Length: 422
Image (tube, rainbow, N blue to C red; front, side, top):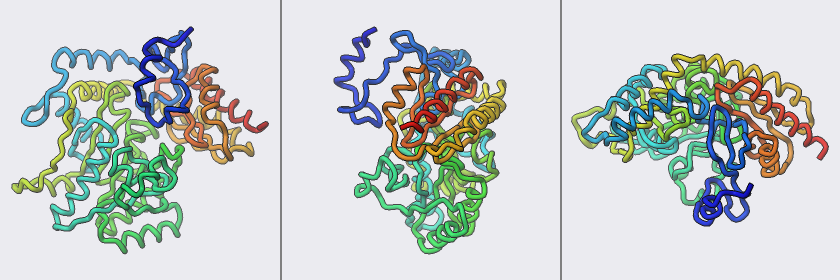
């Protein structure tokens, strides 16, 4: 079957994400989705192993989510939050505050994860100005970190080993440290925080650095970061755009670890992959620095679609599903399956590491391999899996059927094993 006309015509005009348009392989045209399946234009079906960039945790086209969106669409697609209020945004804010750990209770809505992180950084800078009059323009972030593609978020990504390294001269400089996984690195972190009084906050992807190749660190490491921030009176930001909403076995990495940040960002799975929506949640103590009779202490930020009614409606429905259906039990079952399926790969010489946590399973390879070729092979075998660098990984919908999960893991095991002969 030939490709549809819209693809042929549109390729002359569309600019695709993370792609060199001159050399990128032709994208595969999709006709529809259902459950954990992607139905292609030619009728083939792919089992989705990454849940549409880690968003579709309930699977595609979940009827409850679609019904909630349809009801809201008929009632009121959106209304601005400047001077007006609507039920879905206010209800969602209340529910997120109830789910978040500690005193994280003040919710600011935006459209994307990058913007949610931008808001978190902005809050941290203004927090110091509002409370002490200090100008603290810098942040401390960690190697391997990824926090978004906008300018401020690029500056707190890994400055060397990331897709954003070429923008270095145009970005504000930040302090970048190794995760404090041992005593020496903990001392280095402590020294940086002690030496530099211009740091507004510390930001980290808790327990799992996704875009870096699903790199994982332990709870002790996260506790060291929290304790260092406490010693120096610095706010701690958790970027939970990826790790939030059950990904690692609890609703948030913060609840899994028992470590509570001062600011937390959420996105991706917030709406179950149906609509753009993200949120920044601040603790009450952070918020109090903005709550004032002085208008200059207000947070002056306002995306046009902040609190988007359709997005908030489907997010509320997604939270309903977490309450009504056994999502965290399903994540635990995925964890067990991945651990068993990938265990034999640990002994292979071409495998550098196997990492499993919650619904995420990653196999890091040694040396180079043909990433594009591997992606094409996976599609030919009826699965949609996109390696990151040297890491082949899965992060499927929590609702995936055991047989489909077995197909995904077998595809990876077979492909990785085959690399031995090359």
